[in-house]
Length: 80
Image 1: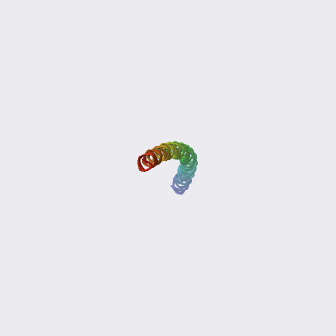
Image 2: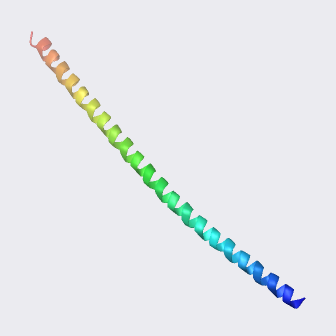
Image 3: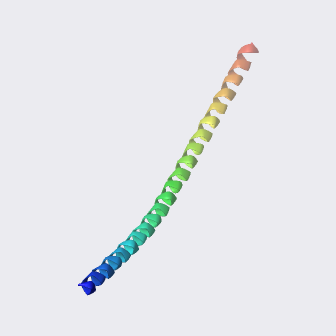
């Protein structure tokens, strides 16, 4: 009976060892997935920022052109 108890105790410990190793491996996989997700989010964020910056620059150029046209029209109007 003592032998049976010690054997089952060893098996329980081994089972815990396997379970702990599985947990560590799962944790490592989750860490890798998290790194990949972070890189993907950062790439998307960089892309969105560049897109937004480009759109803003285009809007600014268009507004500057409109201002220039209005100034020209105003100067023609006031010079009469």
